[in-house]
Image: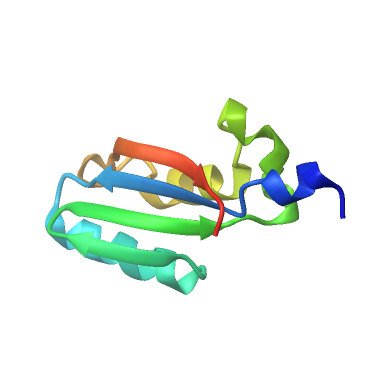
Length: 94
């Protein structure tokens, strides 16, 4: 295996604030259903999303992780009580 393959991140951590704690709970469940590891503290949801081939981990330095972005945008839609504020995000090697 090439050395650069070992250095690629294998997951992406994102911490978001959801305007309503009840919607944060809904998001936490939805992320878990997609296979993410999730922690929730009130209106803040922290998720570790495992990389897939579609996520192109070699491009994560440019913040490109389409499956997670698509999921979060689809979940939030145009509902005001689901508009997410990103508090922290970064690639992880797990």
